[in-house]
Length: 120
Image: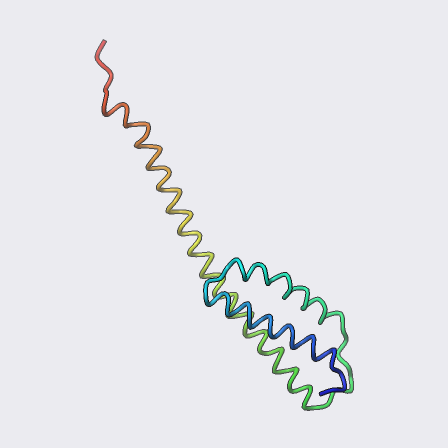
């Protein structure tokens, strides 16, 4: 594993950040997730700049394959959790808009109902 430590180290960082993002989403720590996402994306960019060394040993290749698989699994789970959060936020926005419409409607009618215009 020590033949290409930088390559493997970068993938380990991606995997750790991926796990961290998933845990933050599970705990509902959305602001921290957004804050960490920048580091995660930068780590992905760093990994993509490196070419995979052709002479990686079979154990290192297996380990790398496992890391990449874990990252992809985490991405899928994270996507599901983010979709659920978007649906929650959409429902809250819809509820807020309905409440605002009700408040506006009753606000306009309150003066008319309490003090109707007298006939002329």
